[in-house]
Picture 1 (tube, rainbow, N blue to C red):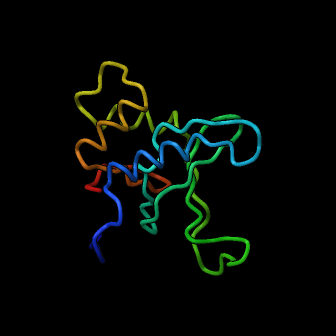
Picture 2: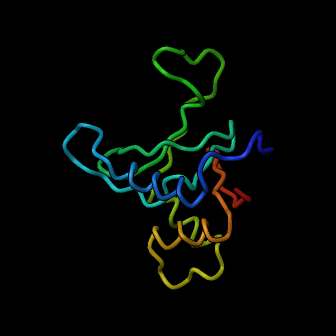
Picture 3: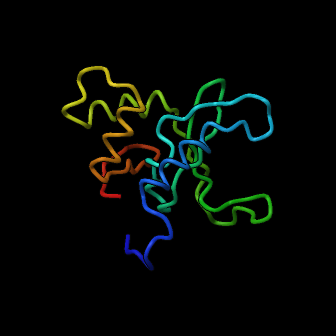
Length: 129
């Protein structure tokens, strides 16, 4: 991905705010925490995954730009990944994480090394942010 212009805020500030926003309740009265917010990208369209709550568990999704105002029309189906499955994948991809690190420690590792996890329906790979 090529940078179009300099960022308005530092990456560290952006990630910190994403972590705060990921834990917000969005008016539903229940706060959910997402350990990997801002560290996952869609391998199909390149967008950052949105944090969502799915079947009582933290998860992430990409709607490939689809909204209720912009119907799908030729776009791929929504892509959902559960956080616990992503953490297991990250542990297998990152060699020095055999100590049972939490998702937050894995997210810190990704941030420190400038990495994101690029996911499709069938695979995930580590890529430079």
